[in-house]
Length: 101
Image (cartoon, rainbow, N blue to C red; front, side, top):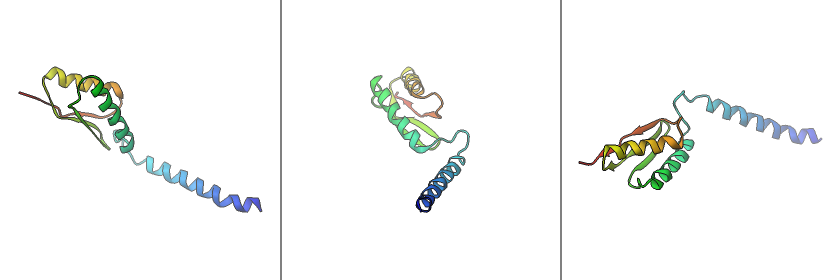
């Protein structure tokens, strides 16, 4: 009797695991998980803020993290990129920061 009650639960759990594994395998080699990238973007934003780069905007997509906004110099642009890469080196990072004239 106990076996009959547990059987649907075990089968449901097994199906859920198989379904999740199948979904995860669809990603390409550089295509990250959007949720993971959003968490990483929050960490990057916090690190940039701590580095005094509060005006740099950080956004996340399935492809990675993008830095946007305007900075005062090429050195500041480079520093923002280095701070972002310091949070997680394996991520795809696009630096679209513009240097103010």
